[in-house]
Length: 448
Image (cartoon, rainbow, N blue to C red; front, side, top):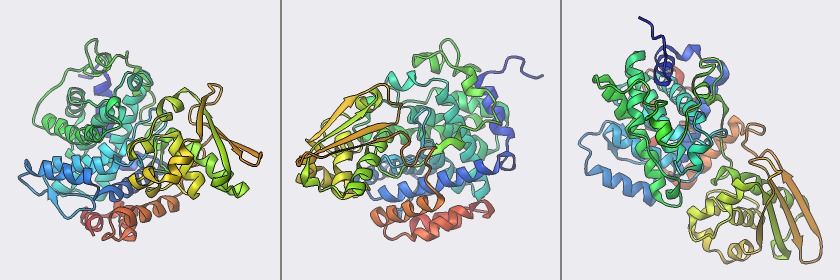
């Protein structure tokens, strides 16, 4: 009999189980490939970072099989551990994608879980893309239903909602029907966690890795017959209320299948917190327009809304601080005229020229500016002043990165973190993935 009172889990479960790759609009299918390409870029950039290495070494103690590839690394692990490590690698440098309405980075947990499970089970490229699209949509939809309060209360929304996305992606790959997929999503509600307080540390990334692995676990448990409460998400004692929110059901399920949140995914040109991008753009624009000599700068005033100051007005002591710092982003943009991975490294944090210019940056609040915007004013020692206001940062929906921009980003990431990998081979493998009967070509390219 039909369910006369559909729940969030059952509605999303039916969407995931019954929607196929051919049902998605062309633009959404292309957006999924862009998301995967960008995710592979950021994973390759950090594949050999000490944090990723430490995680891989630790999880290796528990891994008894070699079912899945570690991106940019020679080792292989069981699918759950590989999903964990690869999700961390995608997310580590704050260079991955962003669904701006929720600030979820949907690809790290969903793609890492889907890639590992699809490789383990010998599935096709089309199945991987289909699962990523469904999982990304579920993560963003559930996030919309609890935003902005969920994040504001301290829940790291990429980790929490990423668990749902990974569960949905893996349920799709396993071929689960609507009921079992709904149970996978409900089980994920008990496995979803992650804290904003841990953002300045590697514990943040561990939460994202856990989202990928726990999402896969939820789908496998549902396949084995485990069940969840029908209202595990929106119930009076469910996930949303436990995290402090009354779920917005319409945001989670309204126009499902006709309005796609995952199609609104954006991609970063700079490895830093998304709200810092307008600051960096403004500084780069002023530097280029006025041939500014950094040594002649007396003061830099950055004005933005409450979110920008809450996230970015901080003391910088390491590279993690730098990636979410108004002061550091402005300083390196003005000093170097670029803001890439090297400019947010530990060496750049300690560079005395950067330290000196960071000290000249002042952050001011102006709530008339929209979220994501910034105003930059530069006062020079010789008395000149210049200012710029950036409403839509590069990489936003209004100014998206092109396909060639993302390809160039991947090549730069390979040079930075995975020099044994042929970037062009990865790019070709992703663009042509839809027609591949297996993931062999992609995974070979990803390890070099």
